[in-house]
Image (tube, rainbow, N blue to C red):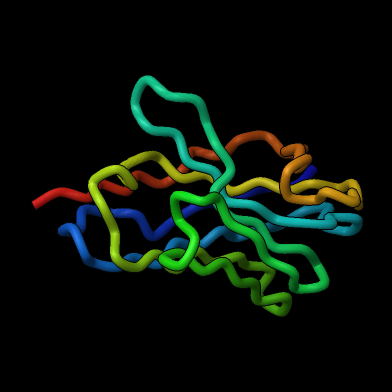
Length: 125
């Protein structure tokens, strides 16, 4: 079992920044990639950023150039630095992982873990 605990959300004004953290513990051997998802009210949960164990990263079009995903392998933590935040970034943010090494690893990312409680990000003036 892998445990995922998200933190770092909050209320921020448009144009502001936040850094989210995802602490990963448990049976982490075999994880190929970590990803950040978000779910806005009334919408489906969507992948916005992901990073492989080798350090490759990819992003959804809506966050490209504004968000940066990174990982600290010593602390078993994945981060999402969010800059130039917009009201449409308001959502609950979740992290998850994919155990399968895929050729189209981002487009075919499949979350294997149980969803945590997420962390709420609200962008509003």
